Length: 306
Ligand SMILES: NC(=O)c1ccc[n+]([C@@H]2O[C@H](COP(=O)([O-])OP(=O)(O)OC[C@H]3O[C@@H](n4cnc5c(N)ncnc54)[C@H](O)[C@@H]3O)[C@@H](O)[C@H]2O)c1
Ligand SMILES: O=C(O)C[C@H](O)C(=O)O
Image (tube, rainbow, N blue to C red; front, side, top):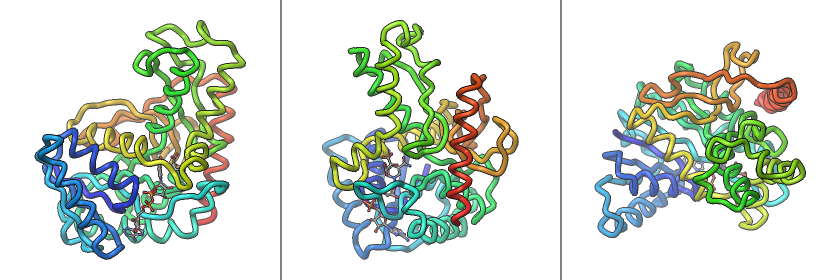
């Protein structure tokens, strides 16, 4: 398994590090446009191999896509992150050009690659990657829901006073401050609905903190987060590499599923060696359906800026 990670910045390097530590890929190629940057990150990471006990070979290149040839999976993290007070949507004018060019370069050298898009505004960048490459819909996946769901579980565990491993929950919809839909109705603690343990008021707090999870960290850090994003995208790469058929909410190109068409937005999907192997249509109640439609409208508005 050969994995390319474009963008050797905070998220790209974190993603490469988690992939290496999990030791399921033979090779990770880091690509960045900044001269020597990916080479430096790769060398630094390789010097952790004997300490962390992995055999994955990590190399870095400056904008040389020939070194990415025949990648099985490519992760796009290239582009600018937001600063405190900004929305992800405000990044579109800079990031659209970068993501389009990167996606085109990737498929020229790896025609069979499956692409995971991370750069923001992620749902629109995923849609753009589809338009730019024309790859089959199963081979372009947007990473957002896996991260948002991990943050949802963090907030649920905090409210319940229990370990995050005790809770299960999922966030669907657009990866934006207002578009995320934490499915509190379906969240459980060891199969028991979380509503059994926490008040509606606490649930509202969990829901709202989950939605602004990225903004909260951006305010604290001065730039956006990288550990949980890196872990989330590496988990998706691992699901493809190991053909594990794990279910992640992720940005999928919809063709009628959930009553939506010609849009990439977060819905649950089974991820395996073929990328998106199945979009899972869960039964939403009327309020959840209305929120998903509203979230889709907002994503369409951003797509209109392309
Ligand atoms: N989808 C998500 O859940 C999620 C989570 C975190 C961050 N993000 C997004 O990921 C992106 C990266 O965030 P970051 O914190 O790693 O930023 P960063 O600034 O640390 O890293 C981005 C890197 O991309 C490189 N780059 C720019 N143009 C390039 C090009 N044409 N080719 C190759 N490399 C190029 C830059 O040189 C830089 O090293 C941002 O858009 C951010 O908003 C998304
Ligand atoms: O918040 C951001 O801008 C980055 C990312 O989308 C996140 O959710 O951490």
